[in-house]
Image (cartoon, rainbow, N blue to C red; front, side, top):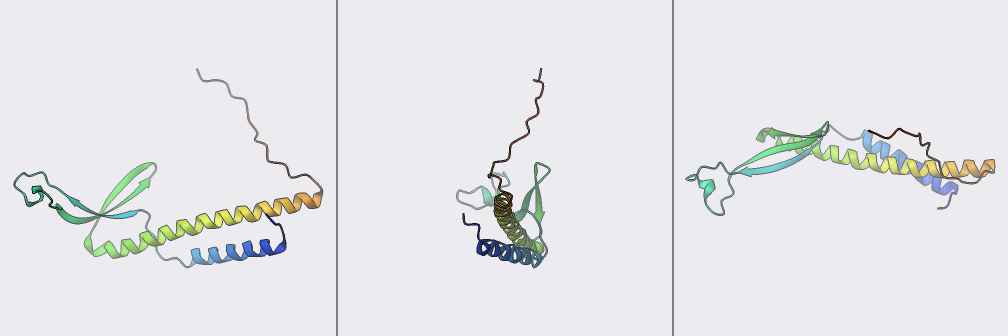
Length: 136
């Protein structure tokens, strides 16, 4: 990986563009919007016939909260708004991930430059491993 100033400038420009992209996002709602059809279980209902899609559609939004999946039923009148906000959240996650990767790459270059300026060899970071007592 070249450590010239052109690479640093390119990464800095990309970082600014990603931050601008994040700042330009609208309202967000985390989760996945899904159209659902269900069967009621009554043997004489139209949904029980072979090939019938079932009752619906109903729209649900699923997301994870503190390690558990939460499902919310979304009224038809709010589906487009929630769809738009869920897409904004997805875009936020993509931009955030790219920003983190770009920042890490830029940080690596700066560390290598600092190490070469100080004359030190580029050494990997050592983990500080504390000794623990075995569990009983």
